[in-house]
Length: 499
Image 1 (cartoon, helix red, strand yellow):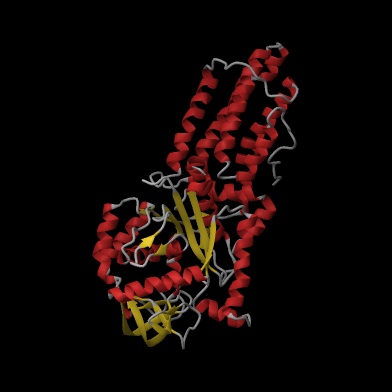
Image 2: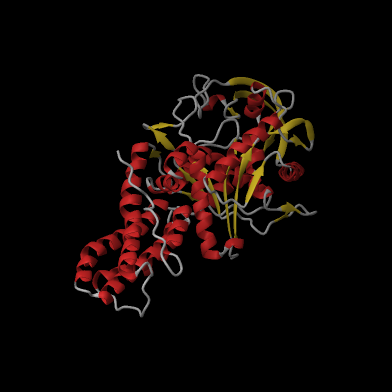
């Protein structure tokens, strides 16, 4: 097994500005990438994100803005790059579907599948949803509304190209059954297997006539057609990290992806279309597809039409990047839906960050300043008993707990991983109250105070190491405050917010 970690986010569609859902996926991916860099090394981790820039919605949005589709794409992509920069997203590569390196691979894949007989031409008659860019059969719809977005459908009849999705349905069912970690969490795996058992897959229409929709990658075998946006976009996961040789064999040092992180609304494309496309190309599927939940407002999904979209930049600007990151990762088990409110964010801030972490660091630095002239005491290793021994054991076991929680086996449970770290923080705060160092000082028990301080310093160092992936700016601040030779106490990390 190769010692590497390749993680991807979806390519975000650029017809509208990024929102909290986009930031949630990228913050989660960034946390895992940072964590894995600490475990296996910088050069063994590849984190890919990017933008999806073709399709009818982009073409129409560009027309409304009186721009060409490429001009519109170039303008909108800056919003995503700017957001990731401000949120500290440490991606290794940002791919756009309008780049030559991607277009080249998409056209190559179309050629391979067409030559193999897995792509054929036929006439399509049925219903089409422009917002979802999806065709639907009569049996799948009611009241001429899209089953996904509930908006109106258009009746269309046209000649198109189809990919033989149905040919590989039995293989996919077997593959999912044989690989329980392939689709996570389990509720999403069950959703996909239930769909596959109860429905016969229709072949996937992978083209659009240029006369109706010109903004896309032309089919190499039919210049009158462009590639369906979803077929085009999925290929980014391989186009970003590999090439096909002269014998049509895919070569890549990073593939297979270890983890595709997605929102649950695009599960079918990733868990059905994508593995089948890869199977037809004789390319190994990704190791895991994880579909997380949505952030809701008052139990309703955020959407521009409802006017309830939360701006990541507004939240990070108001409360701080790390506070925003911490709330998203801590408040809801990854995979479930969450309900976003500023009141909940402020509560987490005051409780977890100000009262627990901030208080532990500040009171420890204050005691080092007061009792040891701002220098961390040296000396031998003290014999730890009682609460000090329990804290030491907790420090020792923490790495293994975090490793399990941030694995596919543990469900990439950021909330549980952070809870484990906070258990250690709370043990240390309790230890201060139990030890009462101010009484030891009155009795001039300097050795006991030194041993006590060293326990707290051990805790802070371990916590600092473990939070670096989750809230990196805070970890850097703590490291700077502790210093190498002398502490630099400064101000509290998280001054309480008055409510």
